[in-house]
Amino acid sequence: MEKRVRVLVAKPGLDGHDRGAKVVARGLRDAGFEVIYTGLRQTPEQIVGAAVDEDVNVVALSLLSGAHNHLFPRIVELLKEKGLSEALVIGGGVIPDSDIPSLKAAGVSEVFTPGTPISSIVEFINANVK
Amino acid sequence: MNIAEELLGGSRLALSRAITAIENEYDNAVEIMQKIYAHTGKAYVIGITGPPGAGKSTLTDKIAKAYRAMGKTIGIIAIDPTSPFSGGAILGDRIRMSELTLDEGIFIRSMGTRGSLGGLSRKTADAIKLMDAAGKDIILVETVGVGQSEVDIVKTADTTIVVMVPGLGDDIQAIKAGILEIGDVFAINKADREGVDKVCREIEMMLDLNQEQVLWRPPVRKVIASQNEGVNELLAAIDQHKNWLSESGELSVRRNERIKTELLAILNEQIGRYILTKVTDSGKFNELLHNVEARRVDPYSAVENILKDILR
Ligand SMILES: Nc1nc2c(ncn2[C@@H]2O[C@H](COP(=O)(O)OP(=O)(O)OP(=O)(O)O)[C@@H](O)[C@H]2O)c(=O)[nH]1
Ligand SMILES: [Mg+2]
Image 1 (cartoon, protein in one colour):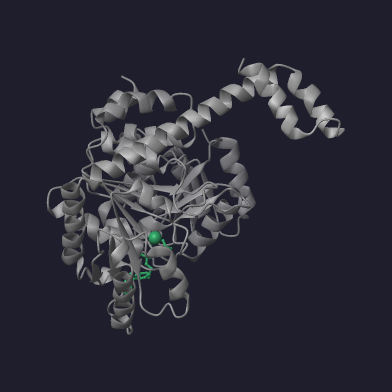
Image 2 (cartoon, chains in turn green, yellow):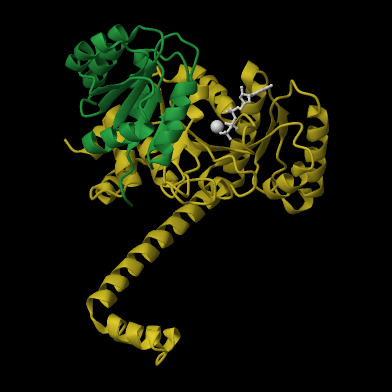
């Protein structure tokens, strides 16, 4: 059986909207990925715990509340700690352009701002997944 | 250290990687299963099945918490359908189990059906063995919520819980016909809703009608999974079934039956693979194929001809 790319779509932080995350989840499913969706308001520890059990190749984080500068690097750090350093971490949501360089420096592979077509996300994953 | 040894030593990541290896049929998959097999057979496997949205995941979450409170370690396998069009899947059962994620004694894995039709994935039984070998005391398997084709769970679990809800309308007749034989215990969930007594009565009645042919009369329990009500009573019913299984000797009968089925399946697969490579490598296959295409030879005679060579 061929390998399937497994993607954890997670919503860290306190905002209560997951419409965007669900649209992304469906788009990634339609691209042939196995998408594990964990619901709203997940702590970095919960997200990484799920990523370990599910052995995901990609962790896709969606955030609208503005806490990305703290939460995204924390998740990258915890993933490394738990032995999942090859997992690709990508982010999306309302993220100012000026924050993107520091997020990338912290180990987030790519940041997708609102309006990015799903196909670009799919392409990025296919090109970079290990 | 290799992955099987790490798994047996308690590594969470090794268990996770091992499940991926068997699911994707990586080269090391067979070796992992060979190394862990002697450590299996200790866990108690509970299946949770029922129509879509019945509350299987919510109930799984509560059952896991209740067993955890008794000091048991838990493995959970939650299966959702793979899209036949894209091969992708949305595995969303974990949404109802968020609180379990931080518990060191609970391991949760979501699986897509990947083309399998009986409510489980083809690799569910192997994933159960891996969790068993990793030392989980109880393994909970949530099937796909398809309504009536979750027959595989019966062959896989020691106790199967069928989750039903009030308000299924006319569908209930069809669903009941399919699930009556599956359930060892019936959980009537969403007992906070109207119509719960009616569903209970209907199911009790159908089980009574069925009783003459069966040795075990499944208990029916009301639960409100979302409020954690009735869960201890449900656990008591599971325990009754478990006790009946061991006292009647049925547990080893069922487990041995399962082992035989598995052994035959592996044998079948390997023999098929062995013969196919032999045949396709021989060149004779293409020759015969052309003859069948041209209708000079019929497919049955062609196969007879091939087998005569191989089984000489
Ligand atoms: N009123 C009521 N709602 C419940 C109860 N248990 C679960 N629910 C709700 O029912 C919905 C479906 O629950 P799930 O646990 O996801 O059901 P499921 O059977 O796992 O669903 P699938 O895996 O999609 O087939 C959720 O909105 C739950 O909150 C209950 O006892 N009472
Ligand atoms: Mg579910």
